Image 1 (cartoon, helix red, strand yellow):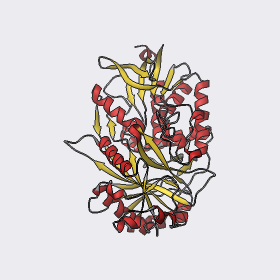
Image 2: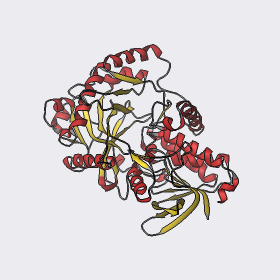
Image 3: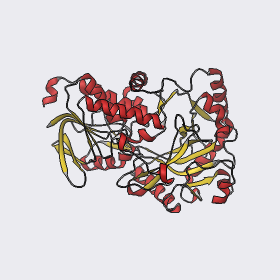
Image 4: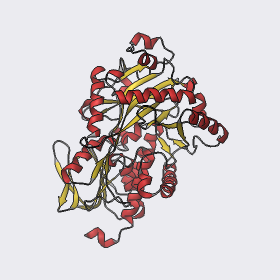
Length: 471
C-alpha cells in the first residue's frame, strides 16, 4: 500500500497532522509509526518502586503515543511568544491565530476550559515592575493546564478517534532510514528488531520530538537534508516551597522570565513551572538520565519546581551542540551513579557539596526521592553555572526567597532540539516529499507549538490538488 502521509513519531506534531488531515480529507490513507506503546499501555514502574528502573528498550515517560506530552505537566501556552521559533517562519499574527484554532481542538477532546494567568492585570503589572528592576523580562502567557493524569485521558481520546477514522497506528517499530529516489523521499524503513518493513507514501513527515532530535540530526547529515546547528539549552530544575512562589503561582501560574545576566549575557529563561508539582526523571538513549517536572490536577506536593535553562550557540569549527549537551549530562550522571544530582543553592555559593542528612533537615524536601545529594558544579560548565547563579539572584528580586540557601537545584536539565531543519513556510525541506515537524525540527518547544505545526501540516496536505497525490 502507498500512503498519502507516512508520519514518524506519535507526539503532538504527528498526532495533529493526522487529526487535521483526516478531518478535512477522510479518504486519505495515513499511517503513524511509533516505537513506543499506545497510551493505555504506557506505565512507569516508578509509581510503585519509588525509584527509576531504567526501563528498556526505552523510557515510557518519553516514548509512546503522545510522546512526553502524556506524562508531562500538560501545559498549553496560549501566546506566540512562547514555544520556539515557529512564528519566525509563519508570522506572529498567523501563529497566534493558529494557537487559538488548535486550542479549540484540545477543548473538543476534554481540555479544562479554565485558563490560568488572566484577569489580574494590576497584580501582573506589579510582578512585571519587579522583573524590570531586576533586569528581567516577564512574558505574559495565558496557560491552559491539562494536568499529567488528565493529559493521558485526553490523548487516549485522540488516539481512539484516529483509529476510528481509519488512521493506521503502528507501534513497536522505529524508523531506521528514509527511502530516497533521486532527490525525492518515497517513504521510510522501519524495524522492530526482528522484522524490517518499507512504508511508502506521497509525503513523509518526521516528527520524533526532542528524544529524536539527535537521530534526525544524523539523518540530515547522511542525506544532505539542509539544516544548521541551533541553540542547545543546558540548565537545572529548581525546587522551592509553595509558600515562596504563592503569589506568582496564584496570579500567573507560570512565571516566564527571561534575562541576559552578566558577565556572559547568554539568554537564560525559566521554563515549565509546576505549582504543587513533582520533580521527575526521564531516560534517553544510552542510559542518559535527565530531570524534568510535572504537576497533576488533583495530587499536589508542598513544592513548586521549574527549569532554568541557559542557551548556548556554537559556531565553526564546532557543530555538534546536541552531543555537547549529552556529554554534560553523562558527566553529571557519572557523579550521581546514574541518578539525578541535587544540591542546595547555599551549598553552591559556599563551595561545598550537599549531603543527604542536610536535605533531611531542610524546609524543602525533594519530591524526586531517588535524587542523589552531591555537587552539580563538578559537572556543569562554568559559563552555564555562572549564568544560572546570577539569574537565580535576579529572580530573587521578583520572588523574594527564591535564592534562599535551601532552594534545591537538580541536574541535568537538557533540551535536545538544537538541530534546525531548513524549510519554507509550507514545511518543505530541500528533499521533495519530506517534512520535519515539532521539537526535533528545531522550530518548536513544547506541546502547543508542536501541535500547531501539525495542524498546519495537515491543512497543507489536505489543500493539495488531487493529481499531486498520484505523482
